[in-house]
Image 1: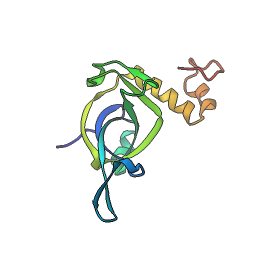
Image 2: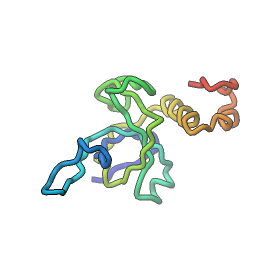
Image 3: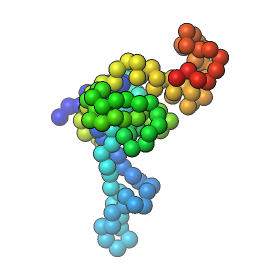
Length: 141
């Protein structure tokens, strides 16, 4: 199955928990295997980097943690109310992607982008990138 990787796409992935002991499965004496869980992510990489590299930058979506950018059920094919976690950026190998759920509407992507700028401390650049939104404070969302 060919997966379409596009900026703003929501995908299901196999998320590996490599450093969490509760997700290690014992396979023999002193041998453990890392287990995984299916998670939803929002793609952040642009088209050029998606073609060039074997991994993609993403942020997690969750329905359990009630903070982040709220996305209601039904938006972009989501089965439940969800929250985008722009402060949790991951680089995921393409081989871990299972299927595409949908595409996030532009107004949500703008909120994610602004939150990423703030998270990565690019406040200074916001006045140049979004001059109409910049009011000289950190509360642009």
